[in-house]
Image 1 (tube, rainbow, N blue to C red):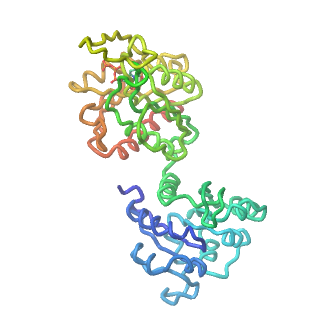
Image 2 (tube, helix red, strand yellow):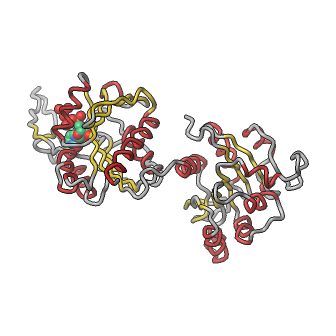
Image 3 (cartoon, rainbow, N blue to C red):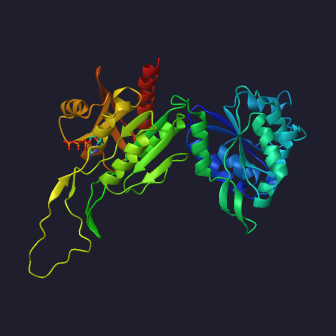
Amino acid sequence: MDQLSGKHIVLGLSGGVAAFKSAELCRRLIKAGATVQVVMTEAAQQFMTPVTMQALSGRPVYLSQWDAREHNNMPHINLSRDADAILIAPASADFIARLAQGRADELLSLLCLARPADRVPLLLAPAMNREMWAHPATQRNLGQVVDDGAHVLGVAHGDQACGEFGDGRMLEAEELTEELIAFLTPKSLAGQRLLITAGPTFEAIDPVRGITNLSSGKMGFAIARAAREAGAEVTLVAGPVHLPTPRGVARIDVQSAEDMRQAAVEHAQLADIFVATAAVADWRPAETAEHKIKKDGSGEVPHLAFVENPDILSEVAHSPRAQSGELFCVGFAAESQDLLANAQAKRARKGVPLLVGNIGPATFGKDDNALLLVDDEGASELPQASKRVLAQQLVAEIARRVSGLAA
Ligand code: CTP
């Protein structure tokens, strides 16, 4: 998917073992639609060759401030002028120290110093040993470069190339790509706290069995990610799903509808937007057996009685904060037919300003979907697209409505 389409990224490598991750990072940025210009310090070339980076980026790599290929012999000026961002990965302790001092005796630090700081952001992905990371000199330098306008991505905690364990690992290529996409996304939900439910619920029959459904949680997770990228502070209440938590999102794992209700009602008190995408089980067994229900050989089957689960969306949407307009609620409707009529009826029943309809069986577990947005002005379609793209479009629709309320 082309989430970085039209973006030009200067990828700078300074010296560190983590440079091996930068090859993958370069590949991912290009796959996401960016053009990538690689610049390497002398130390970086001890860890990764310019040949590899040229092959992956499809462009000659710049290594020296005296590069005569440039018509004016000023690569430090030319390379940054059309960049949407400069990302230094790995950013070594030495390189950060150079930035802090405003050094300009090699191409990469010179380029950072010469960038138009008001329109070309500088992002750093530090990578170093934990003692180097924790050293007051490094922390002092980092503080300085942040004061000077740089943004620091990471670091991660874990095993280090030197055999030690702690802070200082560079983020993985996938994480850095996500961070860069988030960084470059317009902040249409800045300052908003968004709460979202996602996935199925699991209603226990006994300690080994239960009732659930085929919801994968993908749509909800995609919305959580898109909302965070748009600047929202996101809390995701997730039923049992096998999906990684989107970066920067606070996740609360739950099993049953009752657990989900408790988490949602509690966090809704602090939220500005509530999006209910979860496929909450409508009913649960009236009783959960303490021990596994056994076959006794008689051929008799157990008879289960059910009770209705709480309607989380309806409860939150009818709360005083939602009714007063402080909390904007968005519902989903998974239907198998008559999408428009069912979605309109559900919107009225749940009491939400915006209801998003989709054909459930056609989308559960898939990566694509199509959505129908129903509000008091009527219905509009978000045509078939990946859940990622639909999530971004839906976040834009929510942002438009929320900012309309604030205006
Ligand atoms: N929902 C909820 N709690 C429930 C049931 C549904 O919060 N106990 C929310 C869903 O997250 C979704 C919306 O309500 O945003 C509609 O869910 P859906 O399953 O489509 O509808 P139901 O309310 O279950 O109605 P029906 O079974 O009649 O379609």
